[in-house]
Image (cartoon, rainbow, N blue to C red):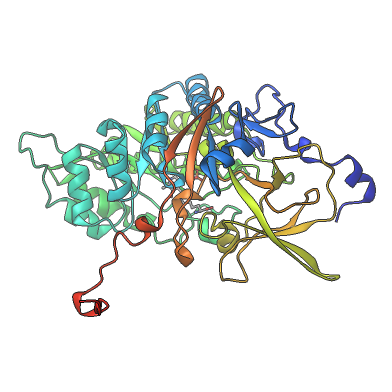
Length: 469
Ligand code: LLP
């Protein structure tokens, strides 16, 4: 609970970003272009968010192009500054994969990490060059592998079955080069984050364990159709401590040394993603620059001490590229006060457009876009509209008094919201607009009821009998 004194001074104006130098988008609750306009409303990318909802409906994902591009540029510039070798930033598109987002990050010179045939297909349709696409996944189908091979992407091999399958596959074009692949390792690095989003510790479904490596390298060295370009690891997500990634660099460079002993010189070292973002005031993630500096210095130092040439350094940020670039705008509806317990304010979306609170107990912050300077009153609970008691977006939201029809904005929803969205209770998925310089462009059309039944099949014998005939 906030004190009375806090309540008088506290308003959503405190959430607006202050343009301090050396800070990166992942350190702010709102996109970089967020301001209060003369009507005291939230403006993002020069667009009034209340008006956007009037035009496009709600729930609405509002994605700020400047913030996304700035994060891409900060990653690339930091690598150029701190890493003496070649480098490539791959956007982990599982955070938000759609045509427009793939096109923006590719235009910023990034490659893309995809984890399924669907993500790969989307990136290819967006025009991302295949040589900048990397296919991950712990259970890729033969069809997914073949799609990647024929397109000419790099395949990050996760396990024995995949490795053995890959050795039997060939590009459709018989004159093509050997299949470009990497090996994913489980480095055994512990980090503090939610259990479901840790991937680098030994009890993980992803990657080869260290004791399998000799056999793996031996096998690959005997396959003329496979070109092993490097090694990959990813230790987890929403990580604030730099130490875990620093430790990872040394472990990976030791494995580079081992690969070399099998005649597999590592040209590319991919250290995954994981940098966290600020979801609430108590989150204090390092900047993009600090994270890149740690990783780059770690790899350079480890290569020096092991006498290895510098590999091309790849990193795969997802959340820290796009998480803070987007907000979700909802319309407030019914309210219910349970005396002495809490007040529920229901919005027109919920766990179907943001499954993170119910899945990971993730915390968010919200504001009322119509009255940014209005003082907060007692905390309220923002509930979704799904038939599920746990469908709560925010438990203790600091907001001014809410009227039905107000625009409630939840911040930091760019990563793993749209990409994990569902049609639970047959809610159509929201629209998304890209905002920049006062212009909003639709990048995801709102689903319609017809979209919801598009894949349904009603067998002839179940069709209602037309009694009018
Ligand atoms: N590379 C690999 C191989 C990954 O598995 C991931 C995330 C990333 C890169 C990007 O990590 P990031 O920079 O976004 O932390 N749905 C969860 C997050 C799952 C992350 C899965 N892997 C959530 O909503 O928190």
